[in-house]
Image (cartoon, rainbow, N blue to C red; front, side, top):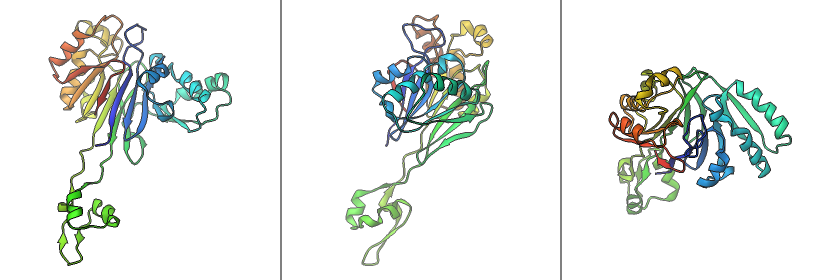
Length: 304
């Protein structure tokens, strides 16, 4: 099974702390690296987790609060100084385009690579990116500014070849692709070997949903139904539920409720408020509702 991993670069909320960096992740799918959000210090975190700068092909920005995008212009500048030539694709709410262009003109004049901006509509559930390996969809969230999450869905792969059967029936290499695509094989003696004897089913496609920042919304569970891994903000514990509602954030219990109702396989909680010196209270609260919950932490890598 090819890699599908989530690298946590930052999982804190807006107020800086010495424990956590602002929001940023790298989603690795079959050798491609996609960044989700880009808070301050993201490029340093890339160094720490040993993700090569040149491998990041696209950045998806959930919303235009600084703790999710203040690191973007610095990273763009560093990419330029390192001699990047491949285009960097940025998917974000339309208002970022003008801001970013002004910053690039002032701070990064003369970049030798293209910045390709893709405006997304945070109010719609839509496919915004697709290649031969993955589809990325937006998921509307409920926050104080236009905001969306992202779902990364792996595309189905072809069945696996049974090497023992290929050798047994002396199937030539020239026929392997045909068999992967469903063809049977007829031996030189006229014996028909059905495809089911020559292959085993493909791996089940995996999916990852990133949901930060958002007020608790029961409808979100339906939007991320059945994902293998769900990252959901858990800025507060339930004793601060009124504060969470006021600032359009979620508690750990609410994040776990979304995971439970969505039938997710595993939940990662993050976007922790600076008021917590440690997050055991948040973890215990979430696990009481959804046992397969873990805490995000810088440097953690989660297999989807």
